[in-house]
Length: 88
Image (cartoon, rainbow, N blue to C red; front, side, top):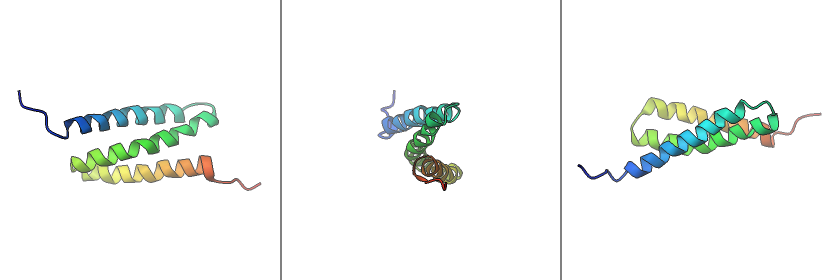
């Protein structure tokens, strides 16, 4: 059998990060309690380095563009749910 490529372990780690954090993001955002649901944006934002790195390495440029859009969207959710002050 061929020896594993040097990036195989790192790619596997990226896949684990995508599944764990991306899955948690979707699950949390669907929660009925908004105090819990807002943490989905944090998990989604935390998953983006794994998406960005793995798609750049694989030269999947369309998915890179989508990951950049997702990064902005997750960041916007974090800002809206944690830092934005509501006018009273």
